[in-house]
Image (cartoon, rainbow, N blue to C red):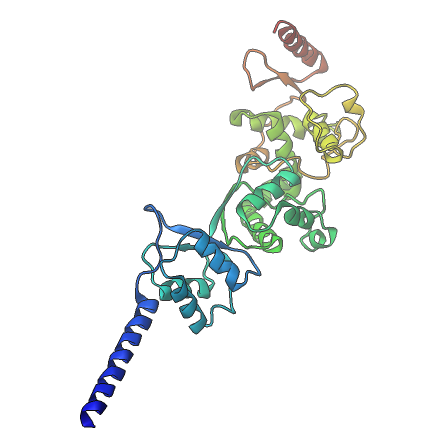
Length: 343
């Protein structure tokens, strides 16, 4: 009888050891397998349920033991508490490490690059390429007058806070979170020194950005931007129309986004838009693109001269010839048109 009891006891202990080892392996044995040398990035959309997460992991063949992961996730109450986001996981992780990473909600940030963006439509598309929301989510937010008013913006100035740079965001950041962050970055950029410079030249910070957007559309040459900015400042001071072709194009594209204008025609100059600086004096109601930081500084430190006209310089592609009088401008224009005819 005692022998039987010992055998039963040994079997129970053995079974317990086997089960303990099995559970230990499910928790602590390496379970993540990644092909190649790089880590794997998992994107978990908001409102994801546990089975969808399992489908994602198995689709990419990331788990050696799927059932083991499910068991650990359930024991750690992760299955009913999925946190969306972007997570980098490493080869050789065990289930405990993987669940702890996903359960923590400590996402790995993405890098959002803002550069050379022409319009709110392009901006919305750019944001959607890097973040969870689609372009329509961002576009709707950037055109919502209620939200914009809370931020001190309007539809015309909705892109004002977006300064070109590289930013870190969490992948599932909402349009509101993105906008609040950009407002802070805009505030940081406008230091006391820059604000004083804007005040000294008679412009508000937002007006500086609008003028910088025009300057950047008129010239791609950094060493000419301060000169072009000086020309437009002269026109503003003299209460002259800015007469900038890019503002005309932008105004037309606000109503007809699909239209591609490579050359401004005389009929275009008559298009009735608040952005048409051939029709209306002063600056347009908002920026016509997101200008680079150095262009904003070029406006703040614009070159002081007496030029009020400019035309493309055929001898120096990308640059302009400047004139103080209309007669001088006509002479420069004739040179340019002769060059165009001879192409």
